[in-house]
Figure 1 (tube, rainbow, N blue to C red):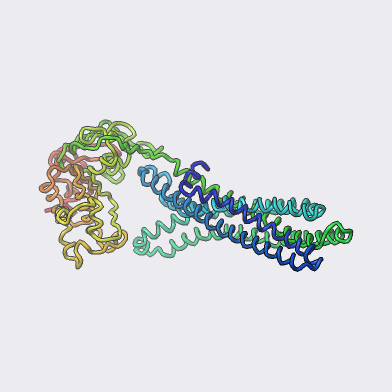
Figure 2: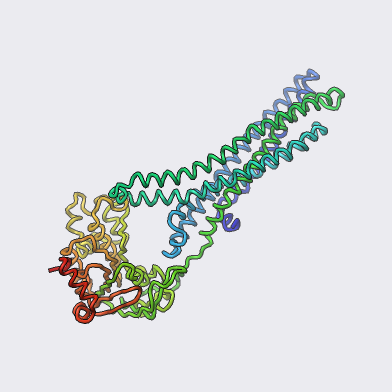
Length: 575
């Protein structure tokens, strides 16, 4: 895990290496100052030698300036290293997620991936900065201060032999009780992000069903879980201040008592006792900071594991970058294909199909019959568990994934538009598409009329998610975007469900007449969308129930005939 994460430091290694050295310099100067103050008191002031006081005073100012300079420089290099480290982790996480198949994303869940890229990375960034800065500064401060206490007043070091174990036990007890609270709080961000994401994405549905209060309750519950855990942890942490002050003052009293006696018998100077007061604060505060770093690292351990889990997950789908780059044609063949999601039982069972290039094929079936899963295998959105899917005469796994998906355009059930202009959204299909090509694709998708009726035409603004367009308009824009790829296969997964039957008919007519070489696969619940197809595939419980033309199926398949008659009586078919 650490190897995985630390390899992301990369170009910021020099800053990560310099920071501890600067911390050593800062601590060395800081620890010298109390001893030089003791020298001023014991040598310069007691002898009335103001020249000596001035000379040592200049050295103290220089040491303070150097300590400040080392500290500022160390803070800058630590921030540079930790911010760069976090940036590299985010980039690598995002790049890895972009390589994930649908199955990989399903495994982690979207909300969890978002938490890992935000909250978890922030936790790791803070921990890394502590590791290269405070993890060096506090132990070094502790060691140097202990050495100086022993040097300036050997007998007084016995006070710390008693105080340090007491402080260590207090820190252990406090942090042991806060660890679980902070860990649970950070883990609670997964549930929090899931609630926020679901509600913002589905805000229209929430409002349509007047569920604002219910969803607000879910939000408050998730938020309260985080708040209560942080409150519990911070309440216990608040005890640290009073307890440490108590131990510090007890040490001061013990040091004053013992130190006074040592001064009386001539074994210690006044200045040396003064310096030990300062070292007492340095020793105890360094212990507290070390403890806090240990707790922060422990809390961040869960975040480190979660990030490393994503980074170390090899995409389940081999993109095969060295695979075939050319798809010969739009022929499609399913050869004894079965498929199941993860450890679940098979969703598709022994599918055998042949679709010739240029055909228009309809796919119908009840909800959950496997229609979407079937066509998802063509573009390798998922890989078949058993059997072979061939496109252009080759196993789809033999192609470079990029090359295959460039030749297989998929218009999914959920139509997604991005903020920008209409033209920018359409050019997702082809970044180099000319205005004429965009117009031609929109003509086939019956999108040109409503686009050209808008004030700014193809430069009209698209809100995030396409919320300023109707469902039917979004579907037509997505079809046009898919066509701009000039693919050999077009898959339309119920992507005309929101358009009227007349527009649906126009789109099908344009697809048949204007892009004849394109293999068209149309999934629909509406028979009018598929009845003129070259063949219609009926799916039932993950299997192919029947294949044929509209007339053939109407003649021999009772289920198809009943569906046809039902939709005819319901007025759902074209006249």
